[in-house]
Image 1 (tube, one colour):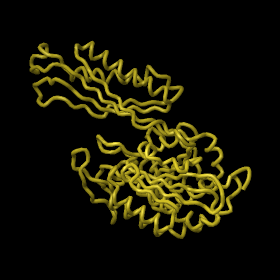
Image 2 (cartoon, rainbow, N blue to C red):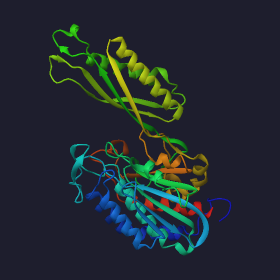
Image 3 (cartoon, rainbow, N blue to C red):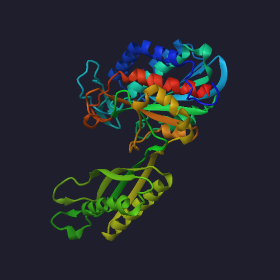
Image 4 (cartoon, helix red, strand yellow):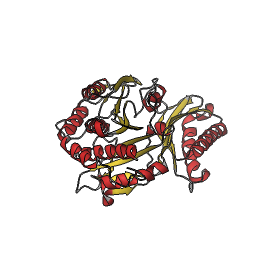
Length: 419
């Protein structure tokens, strides 16, 4: 095919037929992963199932143990061409499932020192099953496949345990995008904000950067009946929380990009009549522009320190950068738009708004042009605005999305390789 991917790939019909034929296996894989979820850097069983599947398909190379539990497979087509990468994440969340399913998770484990339930509350079980299906479909077309496809099964997208490295950044450091280097990378995420069958996309900044914020206010302990003998870190912390609301509402140019500064936890004190020595606050910072991101960090730090100093307290501000902005390469997005239209149908393809959630797929996109799309999982007759969101213990996905996901990634890969 020359010139444009608008012309349907000669493999289109074969991909669609193959994806439909393996639907029972996709569902079985997904249910197995859902019933046996594993947290970041601990996806031992999941990785073993994936690696066994890739080896059984006769891939040219299968690497295991990448970034602890990651698996990378390489399929070389019979025809010359470039390299494209496809990525799926494998980890679950420390969430106790509340959905009544015969394959619901009952798993429990220890995470960061706490006993927690474990659930695929974000749909990574679906992602893993989808990419396993894509691997099988494309392996069956090796004789007519142009170029090579690298399949990246990634651990710890939801962050590794405290004190450990992991995820996309560590996979890259361990050579995930080398030997060979892909010209483009594609990924997807299921979402309970779109109806079943809908594919959502957006060029440019699509998902926010995500940073952890910890502010510790240091005061001086005293009796609650005699606050003048100490320095109250609780009142100071309250003033800091209120002050932080002005960072986004009054100090950054929201006509450029949206941003969020949220405090999610406040901890301090042990008794109602004792003013403690310190209070710790934790939160998140989200933005869609790297320069704005750094500016917000500076403003949060300056404001918190100034408020504490004005109360004769002090504070320590620690901001840890987690994920960069997920930026869909505009040229690649435009190039692959006909593929998405053919896969979803014109009425089921949607330009989606920016998402304040974050994705470490962004690390891959910093090195290789990438496109990250969304697959709707809300059953017909259900309003997506009322369905449980991703990360909820009540998250539910209509499994008919699996075939749609396989078709989307397989078509994106083949059309890119043939263009």
